Image (cartoon, rainbow, N blue to C red; front, side):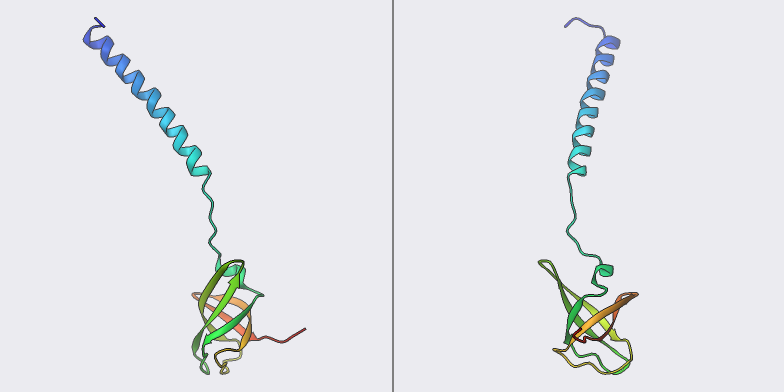
Length: 108
């Protein structure tokens, strides 16, 4: 186009900044559109779960809980350190580190 080296460089720099800004705005728009469907462990408190691996006295087992369409399996301990057999329905009382504290589910 007949521009000198300095003018051509400045035009190229300005064009790069404009296009980079547009790409950045589009990336931010896409990032804001993301959503998460993951369930937090704290959302299990108060829910009913089923023991799938027996909880030994003073030990751990595993429970399964369905929240919406998602099934979550977590390590669990009995609140009173008793044995809870597989297949038993329990209530999730609290979260303790990487495991849940559960108690026998009683119908209200």
